[in-house]
Image (cartoon, rainbow, N blue to C red; front, side):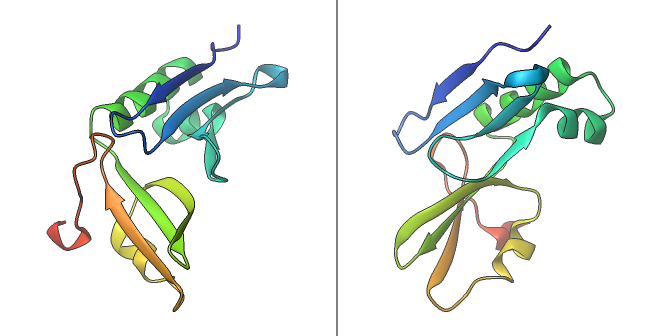
Length: 115
């Protein structure tokens, strides 16, 4: 049985986190209007738990500020948003016209130097 689709709106209106049930029982989790996403089967294999539990845990981590959200700006426009596994590493790949900022779902800032 596929997982139901759901959307979560950040309090500051910056993001919509979506869980989308796709064809073939696939589920994608990402931020609406941005390219980054992950899938239930990937989360399941990384967490060694069934897909519904892995998706629920991942979404709950984001919504409860237990996951760091990265925002890539290109020429001062947000071009992508993702859940960062390693914020310091993410910073290594910035081009001269890019910057990456980190935050939590609540809007609280995150600094890679504090890890």
